[in-house]
Image (cartoon, rainbow, N blue to C red; front, side):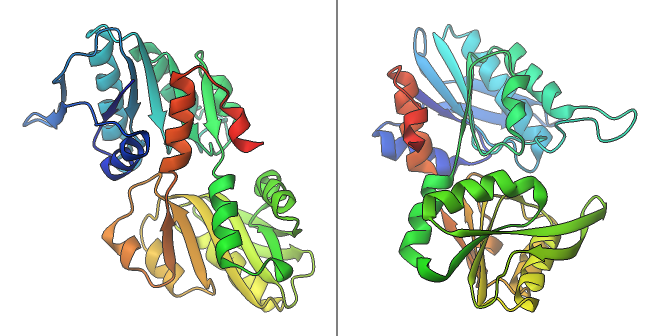
Length: 310
């Protein structure tokens, strides 16, 4: 078993390597003067079970090319099996045709990874579960719920806890966490006028005096989350927290969160946190390295991955 890290999230790759008590495979992932990606594996991987760790976060296209070229380099180096470990799968929000003459880009990226030579994929909290079916190779979609649940039990009062889905599309995720914690469930009903903007319309459920916890897979601009937090507080909630798996934080998202009604926002390190994220007063980072490391160990040993969530 060997671990190869590209450039998008070396901190997470190092933490996974520490969890597995392994060293990262020596490799050069760099660029020529014209920004072409160049990868060279600096040690023997013939016959090895290799895991390539790369989130396809900003800049998404560069990181996708790094992943594809790294996979190709491993194929041509006679690796026995190649697993693309993608903690955050970019383009996952483009999982269907939303209007006429638009692409399904998540399927295209899945095709690219498969054609490059990956034998299987390991990812975390896909935006839409059906993306697993876009790959023609085995794909494991891990859930960050165990990491989130552990942190909630350590930091929040469960007696007043209410899990809130920030939109109707996230109800399944919120219901699953509420069931694990034995908590009640509420839903924010909103109308999205156009991409990147949302208007909160109604709160389904009585949040009066409750410690409300919103859960979602991605925070991008932060508009939906901050509007929902304010609407929940307006309905009489005691305080509002949020757990998000993937912290994209585009534009003024961090400033928006800092000025919002959110008492705390907890994100995972599936996307490497910037210094602005680390220094934000009400944002905290938890690690998915143990979760992903254990899944990788089980894949290498041909053991059950789904039992991680039993």
